[in-house]
Length: 253
Image 1 (spheres, rainbow, N blue to C red):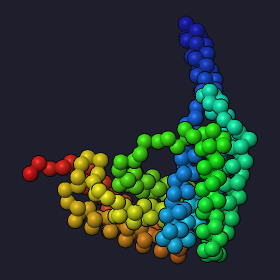
Image 2 (image 1 turned 180 degrees about the vertical axis):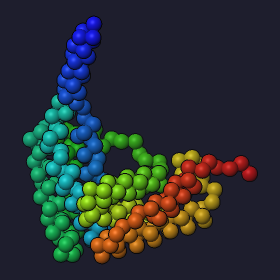
Image 3 (image 1 turned 180 degrees about the horizontal axis):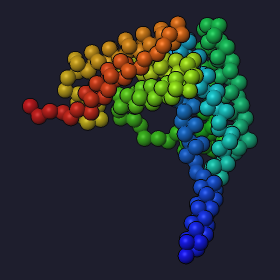
Image 4 (image 1 turned 90 degrees about the vertical axis):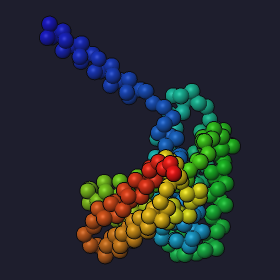
């Protein structure tokens, strides 16, 4: 009896493994394309603020995400989606070339070249929407709450920084702390000023915690530059206080 159970278990396990290998969807493709969209948006925000070192980090992640895309184009066919792959890959190559040039221009702070490349990058992105017949790709619900989006981005980037620190990749970890710090700055400018659970009842305290968290992150970035031991706990403590205020329901007066 035990032998029969063991054989059945092996058969079920094997079938599950085969299904897991074959059951692909557009999720991976969409994920990296949406990451590219965020890289594009954040690069432009950084350039607009003349934060070229931060823009360079975003373009580095831009190129990393571009490199992942070719491996997952077959997922579209698995979901029954047809598109012009030759046009798409040509546009992707053009995007890679433009972002590579953008990184060089950012390092050299060549403002004229940076401005020239920005519309060229945009045109390659538009090509994916039209020429490659992937118009549906970015048809996403409009975000009604940038505040919530930015808070989650801060959490994600701090989480990535911690993972990289644990594996000893300190330079990469510093990049993600820089991005988290950028989102904190953007967070203070977002209106209307409300969280996912309703209007924040104590805005003054909330802004104070945002500033405290930002201050700690800026100090941590200095430690990264000077190769000092890094302690993320104080910044996380203030970020958690920001989260508590964000999720606090509106009070009945």
